[in-house]
Length: 392
Image 1 (cartoon, rainbow, N blue to C red):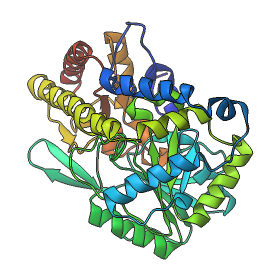
Image 2 (cartoon, one colour):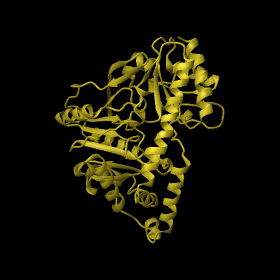
Image 3 (cartoon, rainbow, N blue to C red):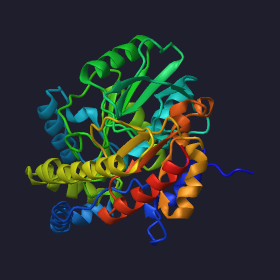
């Protein structure tokens, strides 16, 4: 029987591989940057030394999250994007993933569908009773070796309860333009659906988008943010901006699952936002490191891959998405050849729902992580080029 990686669960065991057996370009591990980590360390010291420490860690707290942190986030994002965000429209979550699971649960309870535009991060599909659907985007070719996914318009109906998009995208790095995301929000509103935007790589935190981008806002818009890529991945601290009725529903569900988010990291985050050092480190130094890695990946692919390929235009984030239109062996199968040769990359199939697995982009693409050490990227892409040159 031919081995394939069709499901996200097939790939997950490899994502954290760090034992030296493989050059791991499949992982989504954030890039470490010592100055950012040191600023986080300083904030935790301040939190531990704060007079409220004993009460923070020894008492129960409200489900919405720390009031001072919510105020700081509302002010930071409201000022940056010109949005009328108040603290009442902020929910602190135990990681952004918790918010997406809540969206699935609430949508399932209403008997409606959660819609994605493929390819999209499979980690959103967590609820056993949720009905997930996926639409293929339009593909706009850009020059000889780039393309861009464009979400289709006019495809939503009243059976849709939520649309989830990552921006910048995982796996593609795509940033849906401001006009397009506003139009999608309006289409969702017409269908009575919630537009949920995953801003895990977006400004302000961690600021890993390479161009200016605005944020949609409205009664049916939910913005999901995270501190993870800003040196806090291990602490699972996320936050949501949404209208008060949405925040109320999410917090009620959160209260049943985790009661309230962890306290010490919230206090540390409040200290991180007490001045602009953390934000500047993320948006300037950390973003610059990611941009350098993206350039390195592009240079190695241009130099070593001899068969036709196109890369999705890189707007930000920590992945590049390559499509190889003449690849004879499906990416889901070629994963094991690459693994046995010493490199891990994420094949395209898990980023699509099963009814779309025969689409060319679902069969012939790979997600390439850019956060591995430089030597691993160079060696891993050298192996990748050898293998795809042999199989196309």
